[in-house]
Amino acid sequence: MKRWRTVSGFTLLILFLCLFPAPEVLAGKKDDAGGSKEEPMLAGDLMDWEDTIPLEEAQKAFENIQGTDSGFSLTEYVEEVINGKAEFSLASIWQESMEQLGEQFESQRAVIFRILALGLMAGVFMNFSGTIGNSELGETGFYLTFLLLFATLSAGFYTAYSVAGEAMGNLLDFMRALVPAFSLTLCLGMGTGTSIAYYETMLIAISMLEMVTVHIFLPGVQVYFLLSMINQLADNRFSRMAELIKSFLQAGIKILFAVLIGYQGIQGMLLPVMDKVKNNAMLQTAKGLPGVGNTFGGVADTLLGSGMLIKSAVGVGGLICIVVMCLYPLLKLLIFTLLHRAGGAIVQPVSDKRVVAALQAAAESGKLMLGCLFAGALMFLISIAIVVVSTNLVA
Image 1 (spheres, helix red, strand yellow):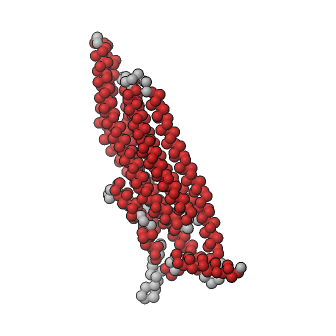
Image 2 (cartoon, helix red, strand yellow):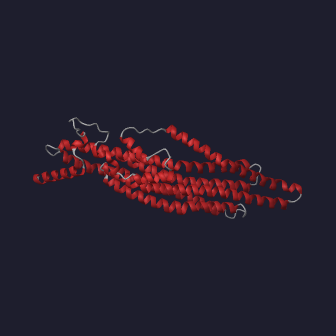
Image 3 (cartoon, helix red, strand yellow):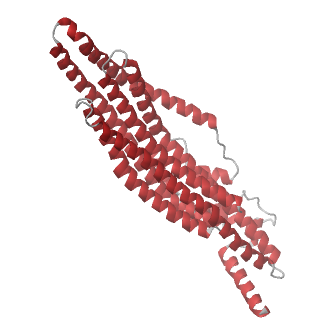
């Protein structure tokens, strides 16, 4: 029995020495004069983390979406974190958000003024046409004005619709490139079980989000908008149908978000602990080997700490990329929603109720698209944060 334990211990030692660099790599390489050469935070082969973690695909996907002048690079950020130089400023994000908010308001201002003018004109036709002796003329003028209003609202809606669809597609493309790299970083921290489970879960989440959001929810918002517009000219015959579609979309977004985040949260509570138990058993066995146990323990602890740093850097860099990609589309959809809701409130005292209902329907459509994109981005943000935090807590 003792002989079997000795053979098993030396087998574990040989496996770890084959997988990890020798202790002198971490201690610093000797130069020609015999002194030790200073190494950065991660020494030796760990400085070549780019060869182990394929972040090139994620960086290319981010650059294809944001362009090369976005001001943020995922690979550079991870390298700066490893070298202890990374900085994160909330003030710069706030300033960028305010600038984009102002730009979107300026671009939407002319459209909302046109909508307000049409709403006031419709109110003039409906409220004052009877005073000049011909109510049919006023009704005809109202319908012509409403058709112009419908065309203006449709143009703004389809612009916002294309923004939401493109942003969701970009988000899914980036996550397809980031998930393999981030899953490999979990293996560096000896979280093999967590890595495999996270990879499978995120592939399922990406597929479900693409199938449900892109092919069901966003087209459903389009149907809701069209039904709401037609409902104003059909004596509210489609009001129940429009409300049913709206309720379905709102409930569907919440259920999808809860299911995916709940499943990821359960895995985040269980799998890192299981990996920790297995790693502790293996490390304690190796540390008990006579002669080389202490050396091996020091090397293993250094490697695990280095792997955790790389994992956290890639995870936080991915979070920043998601925020940068989704910030501009979310602000655009938010401005679209707020301006149409404000337009409905402004014209309500002087215009027809059908005009007000049309503006409110456009605002609700923007709110639904905003919810779809925000839920998708938040789902990926929380998933990455759960894995990073849970694996750090049990390390």
